[in-house]
Length: 311
Image 1 (cartoon, one colour):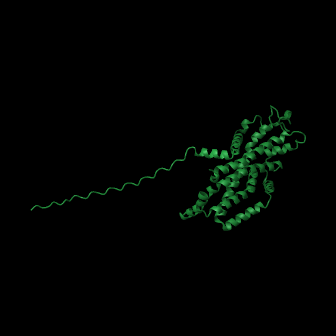
Image 2: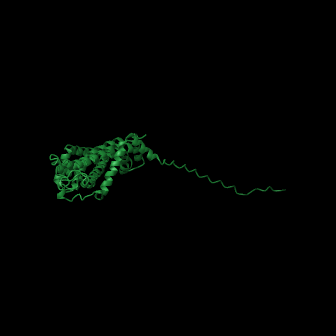
Image 3: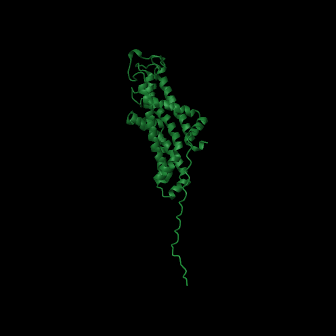
């Protein structure tokens, strides 16, 4: 009798599961998307391009001012006092024979540094205080709000005068005074924007995944309140320059013989009656153009940064 042969071969191994297909790469941003945004902003607000160009000119002059000045801004010339604008002295000379064009050009650096320092100090401190007040609320918000109300109760320029008079009229004290009087604007703006966003969905989602309060404040909330803060900072640059010039005009700002625009206007104001109009005119025009530049730049930054204003 034949015996049936039973196959003892092992079963074939199961095929390994194929790896999940990798997701397609995210589409890269179009290389000209930023240029389209800039073109859109320029078409909606052409003055923003003018402001950007003027700012570039001011920054260039601030960096290379001593090289661009044809004369020493501190050198006196007794034979060239009170000369009207001419080919030799484009903006004329002052009562000490100093070239006004050279002093205006060199003064750009000092005025920009004062404005930038005060704005950075006020914006940084005010944003942190406003973020904490708007996010935590309660006692933190009340204390911060009452402190800003007390600060706003004083006339701001008078408060700056008192601070500089108490601390001394140095460049650092002018920066501190300008930062203090501009602090409430940043605190209130950051607090109001944060109070609106603290109940938003992305904040609640961050809480659910265990994000800490500092991470929520600086990673999620701060980028969303930057557009209005950037506009405020641009406007404050002009205000800070005006405050510094005003303090110098009344004798509480930069000390002579520093080439500061407000001080130059103050020194030349008494010569307008006698016919030397060019002494305060050109520093005043430079101050006016700088303030106008930052005001126009604020509108351009708002259009460029805020996605609600872009198509």
